[in-house]
Length: 421
Ligand SMILES: *Cc1c(COP(=O)(O)O)cnc(C)c1O
Image 1: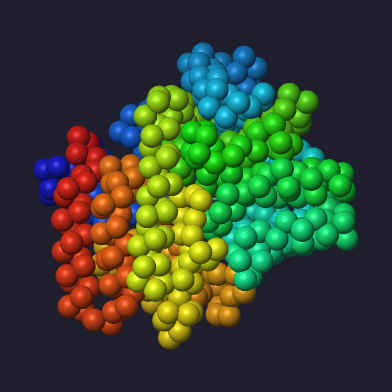
Image 2 (image 1 turned 120 degrees about the vertical axis):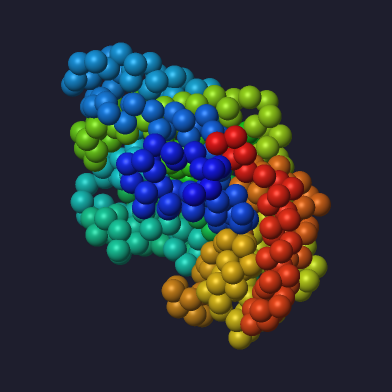
């Protein structure tokens, strides 16, 4: 077995899992992670997540637990909360949601009753399953209608959203998206919510880090509730978070526990605390700005080869390519497969006014958070953009894919990952 494996204890207990863990570590080292929701946490976050807090039951909240022996769990959770308050400027923070979806569930349970109405962005237009897709609990418990982006411009149709809100009279409007390349104008969503007396949930899952660093406007203090995942641009390990004003604190806390969850994943809360501390360092602002600059460069590079971008560019960490104009016979799934073969890992994605199936849509989504974590700047990103284009334009050419794969390997060596694990 490779001597560089950090999983020697797992190996003694379970060689099959050690093989898979080592394979995954090397996969991350040797390929370019461009799935826009992914990132690489620091070794410190990994260590905190692998700590003995995984053993501890800590139902309740700091100082009000249902179990003895929670003094260190309390310390860790209080640190995570304090740091989150400082990062995002929220009055109240709950760091216990197991994921972003659970965070949204917490908000819905806190303020909605079954049958209440949710107005959210269509999944095909960049929304998220937890915003009320029929296959998700939110779609099953609540009545959901959806707003859209303007199919021509790719921007949220805020006027359409406002009119839709007046006609539908939702109890809550959800903003914040999974595949939207532009800055979200939270004040405009809030205006629609105010007009109909609806709550506003801003789900910043993807852009938590950009908001914390001030490179994207913040919904904190605008929307009633702000939710997020903690493993995307914020690099604090897998989990979720809810922020709100003090007035909703007890409803939110009660909705998360005991409403939706049992014991919190305290090892992940420790990961959040460490990741948030890292994000409070001044370098994190530089990182977040570089993520956005890199996405802009990626978009410009792809566009220079004739690929069309939804909304013609980006303000955030991701670009969404609509392949229909430049490569009408190529599906997003085919592009995803060919790119993965070359070591560039991203995902096929629906585009506004989608004409194919969601299982094999017309677009690809590419994000820069993970490559920026590896230290890539605009020159390297331009090279990556060129490589993406070469594969997209030659999906059936094994020679091209092999050449690109070699260049990807070289890039991975120049920008190494997890060297000290
Ligand atoms: C990623 C994401 C979530 C939450 O996802 P989890 O996998 O449950 O953490 C929620 N909303 C949006 C918009 C997302 O992109």
